[in-house]
Length: 156
Image 1 (cartoon, rainbow, N blue to C red):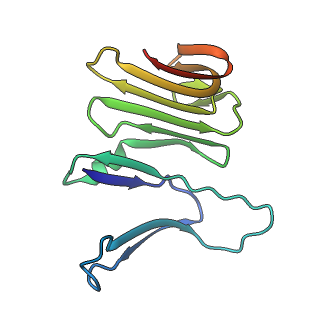
Image 2: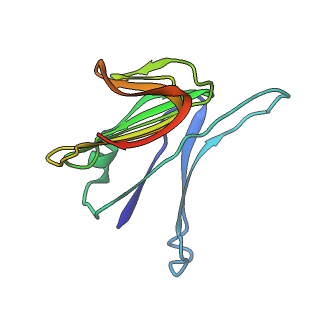
C-alpha cells in the first residue's frame, strides 16, 4: 500500500519537501514532507494544520487521487473534507469544534465529528459515525437524528 499525504491549502503556509536520498539512500525515510508556517507567534495566536492520510493501492499518478479530495472548510473551528479519490467510494469527514449547526457542501450537521462513507453497489451503501451531535443530513435527506451530544454508529 502507498500513502497519500494531503494538506488543504492555507494562506501563509508552505509545502516543504526535503530529499536526502542522494546523500543517504539507505535511510528508512529519505523523503520528508511538511506544511510549514514561518513568522513570529504572538500571545493568543492560534494556528492549525490539517493533514489527511489516505492509504491506497500503488498508482502511477497519485495526483489523480489528490484531485478527488475537496476541502469544504478548513479553519480553527471547522474542518470538512469530501474524499472521492477511490472508485465507487465517497467519504465525508467533519471536525466541528463548536458543535454549532454547519452546512459544508451538501452535508448539514451539528455534530462535533462526522465520518460518512458511501460505497456504490453495496448494501447497506452508507456507514455513518456521528459524535456529539443531534442530526446529519446529506442533500436534504436526514440520515440520522438523536438527542444532542449523542454518539451514533449506523449502517444506513
